[in-house]
Image 1 (cartoon, rainbow, N blue to C red):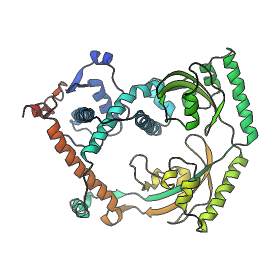
Image 2 (tube, rainbow, N blue to C red):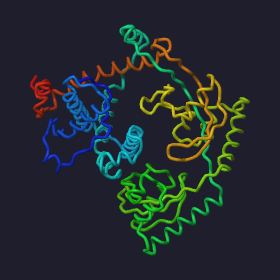
Image 3 (cartoon, rainbow, N blue to C red):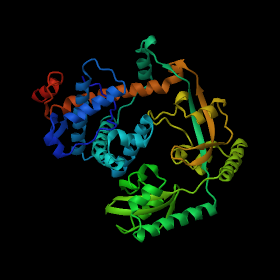
Image 4 (spheres, one colour):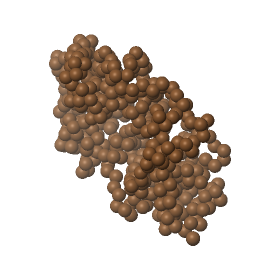
Length: 446
């Protein structure tokens, strides 16, 4: 029944031992426990996202949890590790994806009925297990490769009428410069935050109330500035330096990061982990500030057009977009990891900018506003354009190579599972799935 593939529980909350004692256990995998609420929550999520169910989806979800637990058990035996930094990056990535699906971070808080820091805290253990399982998958499949001949055989095995019809796609790179506020505006904001800090220190206002009233970090302001637990390296370096040197319980001096000016109150710190609150004030960006950035980027664009500097080199050396800088400015689909971006998934500003370009052209300088509210300017290089078409080996070799490789990896994982399930006892307790998943219990007897 196991269909394999990469499977991530986006928002499945980890379960405490106190909860386990009150809940039904769906399955035991060695010493690992899968409780009914985990399965039910993931099943409901898949249904909400439109996954069809012909009667077997619930047990398939439970089976996927069993597979994950087997991989986690083996990963721990093999001493595989997942760092706190990896967990935090993956946690932030998933929250961003969910925010995009629901419309905002505030919508997440409303739907799950708890502050975002608390929700993140509950998610960390489950994400750590998922990352451990993924590390084990990668170890199992590290030596798996596909040859061009295997890719061609994979392609020929697909009926023509089953080949997908692909939408228009593009490959893009960008260079971004952020507009910077004037020195006078920055000084005015710094002084305003100094005044707020003095009010807090004098006891005329508590930190949480001040954060709700003044902080421009909307995500934390509603929670009294609470950031939840974070690890060293998760925040920008300027923030980390204060967070891991500031005495616990004291309000920091005003300090600056790329996002604006902050004051910080660290409430708890153990090793490389800290917990606290902050207040952020952002200097206002004027039209003059944006125009200054536009002129700087226009000069850089002219250098690229004169062939005195390649676009990729300029992106690495000068772009201020940290997400694309190190890849020479290349934009990636966050969900698939592919550099081929469906046109209909681009944000409207970028879509209309790209729509008028031919492959190889570099756009004029375009002002834009990023997701986090920062204002900047960018130029875009259209590298390739793919018209809508039925998938073919000629135009989509990399897609078929990746699919063939994934199939071969899955075969390797299934062979590994056949061996692993004979050594780790599995007990199915959910009455709805005892018969459907009976092979897992019998495996240990063979």
